[in-house]
Length: 185
Image (tube, rainbow, N blue to C red; front, side):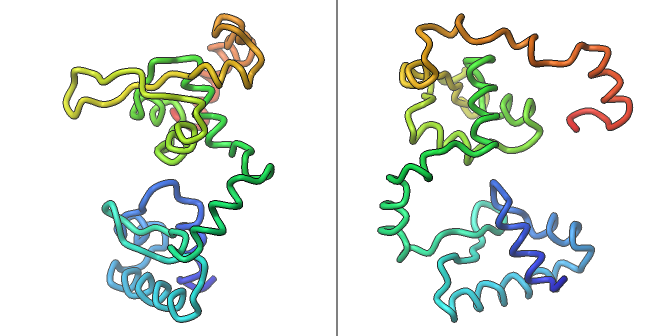
């Protein structure tokens, strides 16, 4: 596969900006070659006026929607198909529902991946909200579900959620999985 195609695929699935060092490691290519390919990929998107742009931000590289596409994206988000939660958003929502109040770093630790995008989406949809700020370095926010979450789920109280133990394998199974695949598979 072409390096630019591989980069585009990686950036498409990434939930956060990906550092060039990580891209270089994944592609097993020198950093300079990866940076040149990223720049070239960005120039190609710009030259053909693509709906996506390749940008360096937040300590890494990421695909973003083109600013000119905003009116179309805004209309799309109002449609029924756009209102479905993604798998990562559902996982993040479940973690918050069962562990609230919970911080971003705790969510990321439980899920094994960054949850920044999912948290922003869930906040935008009104399903979660900031509950408080911790008295810790950086004053991280902790999140909880909202009344809208309960309404959409058709329950009056979090106590009505099904017991989590019914959906989690016994500790002996989890121990065997960790022995086989390592922690945070």
